[in-house]
Image 1 (tube, rainbow, N blue to C red):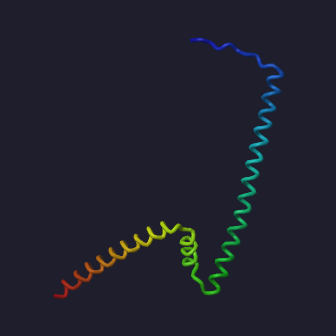
Image 2: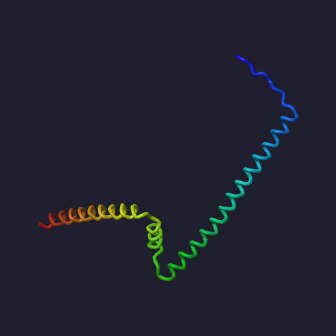
Image 3: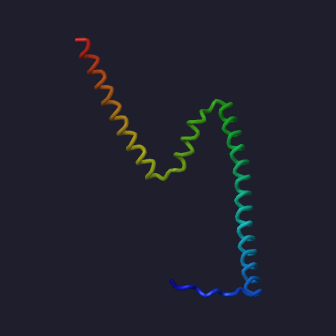
Length: 110
C-alpha cells in the first residue's frame, strides 16, 4: 500500500476554496430562486387556465373538445395525417367487431 503524502493547506488555499464555494453557492441560489419564481408563475397560469375553461363551459362549450382542438392545432400536418390514418384503422376494427357480434347474435337466433 502506498500512502499519499499529506499536503498542508495554507491560509491562501483556504481563502481560494472559500471564495469558490461562495461563488458556487451564489450561483446555485440564483438558479433555485429562478425556478421558484417559475413555479409561482406556473401556478398563476394554471389558475387562469381553469378559470377560462370554466368560463367556456358556462357558455356551453365542451372542455374535453376544446382540449382536443388545442392539441390538434399544435400538430403538424404530418401528425394530423398519421392520426387520421390511425382513426381509419380503428373504425375498420370497430366495424369488424360489430359484424362479428351481429353474426354471433344472428347464429343464436337460427
